[in-house]
Image (tube, rainbow over all chains, first blue to last red; front, side):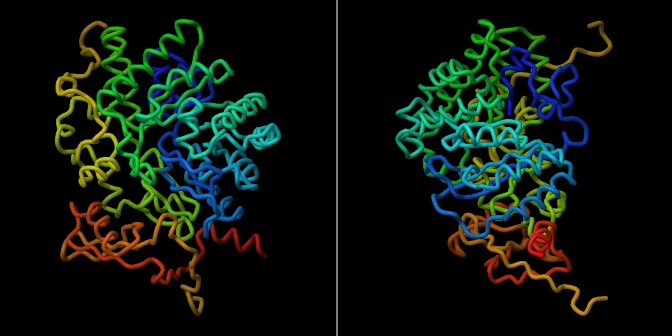
Amino acid sequence: MISVSKLLCDLDAEGDGLRYDAAEDSRKEQIRDRKQRRPVVVWNVTKQCNLYCDHCYAAADTEVADGELSTAEGKAMLDGLADYGVPVVLFSGGEPLVRDDLEELIAYADDLGVRPVLSTNGTLITEDRARSLRDAGLKYAGVSVDGLPERNDAFRGKEGAFDAAVRGIRNSLDAGLKTGLRYTITERNAPDLTGVVDLLSDKGLDRFCFYHLDYGGRGTEILDTDLTPEQRRDAVETVCDMTRDYHERGEEIETLLVGNYADAAYIVEYAREHYGEAKARTVYEYLRTNGGDPTGERVADVDYQGNVHLTQFWQNYSLGNVRDRSFGAIWEDESNPLLSALRDRESRLTGKCADCAYKAVCRGGSRLRALTVEDDLFAPDPQCYLTDEEIQTPPPTRPDTGTAD
Amino acid sequence: MPDDPLSVTVDEPRDAVSREWELFVREHESDPLTHAGSVSAPSADIAREQARQLFDWSAEALWLCPAEAVERCQAERASAVAATEVDEA
């Protein structure tokens, strides 16, 4: 995740310790030390969902699927995550709120010191459920909305889904839960982006995460709706401009870009253009610390049957299963040539990535998209929208230490 | 030493996306064939194609086997399953 609001507007937020190391100057509680080096784990607690979204990476269905980890198995897996030092578990699905033991699992994670957060479509967050999630120790609820009502409902396969999600957001905020938006940008909903932020910020929401489409699950069926490079650049510029506008008006919204690390290079160039070389240098150093695409390193996924994946979007390949051995043992096993190669990918990248000036802050972007489109694990990410000039421009670096600064 | 040190069988389904195929890779002719995870695919041909995409840059040989045909025996339950037994006790 790339925090536009932090990088451009210096917003202090709780997640910065994970993204930019210790965030030493932060006044917010931060995740530090050993836990920074462990992955955030997405746990798809169920495949069942009450909606049927076009872009669902988990290919969720309306029925319960066989083999879900039970409550006790889930708790034992959480024990394993805690032992391994995992900092955050993201309860996801399907729709996690269809599980009636969700609060029990959240409370268990919280007691173990694994920060529990939630990814939901929001439509099942009633006033009572919001309070019970809060009481269980939930730290954050990210609610998916993918456009203004007409486009969102078409995307999500259910009329009224937008209104239901907004009610859920309202209930979550009223319960005192930190709440944010998750918005996957495609050609179909890009025009709604600022309208959705304006509408939801009026309702009290102040955190907005914008996802690029990844090519997993049903996402592979809508590649024709993905943004062109020009549209993607425009969308990212819109997020940057909008963030600055809000902050200049005194409304300190948090905005993040997720899933395409070409954005890292773009934001450095954006900072250089709008703020100057010194700011661009600071932004670059933050992003270099962030380390680029996290697949197989700083993010992991455990599906509802306990299969461990390289990222939540990469569901058709599994490293192993937590019913056979612990998550930590699976994640540490670099005898798997794919896992070890992903952790050493910079030396293997080909094409324009091989000599890209921004390789250290991007690391080739999504390997899943490269594999899906180019049939090549180390080819450039097809969503890269950087120009030849940009990838050849030396990034800003620290001044020589031998000179006064 | 117990009579049967590999007495625990793990037989829960693993077909979260589609049929699951265990994947074995050999990097050099003199290396052993090693387990390298699994792919989800509705047929052997598609499983082979997915495995090739993932490992053809490193593998000298790829073997695939339907996950449901694999008997998974081990000395101890992994923690996830062990907890189920405690709960059910």
